Amino acid sequence: MLPPIAPFNNPKTVLRERMKGERRAAARARPDAGKHAASAFLNAIERPQGTIISAYYPIKGELDTEPLVSALIEEGTRVAMPVVVKKKAPLIFRAYMPGEELVPGPYGEMTPAENAPEAIPDIIIVPLLAFTRDGGRLGYGGGYYDRTLETLRAQGNPIAVGYAYGVQEVDAIPLSPLDQPLDWVVTERGAIRC
Image (tube, rainbow, N blue to C red; front, top):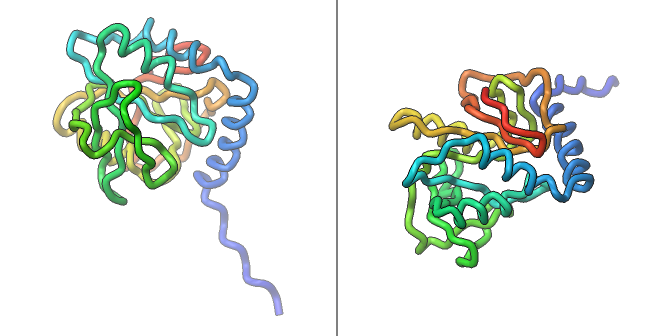
């Protein structure tokens, strides 16, 4: 008897696995990348008075946001962090200041505690596995940021900024109609307006 035929691999799944390795290697090779990306962000992205910026807590080799968060707080910009409330729902955001309590989220991320006030960000810093210069983004596949951006864009005009290592750039990503585009991508190499 012949073995069952293996299903064709999903192109997004194949690309995700490849890019996880690229990102891990970049994290090891460029421990200072977060500082350079923070500088690129601060020089390129306008932050009018009263702007709230959401930054993620890095996990699994994601580009370090701590240098950026510290600089934003120092200049007086308010910072929030994303929180997963339930599966297949948009994220919510809670205010954050360095030194405040963080609690573990369902995916290993750290998030502000439940008593931190909710906030609606004007700029959302988005983690990713791969990006294209025209704003394509490959995430982990849970759809949290896509649902969140779709919801917030229906209410206003938030700016989505992919935050990644330069090696995470690819020529093309197999996108679906549900995938929300990025407005900018910031890497340790500089800022790209999409």
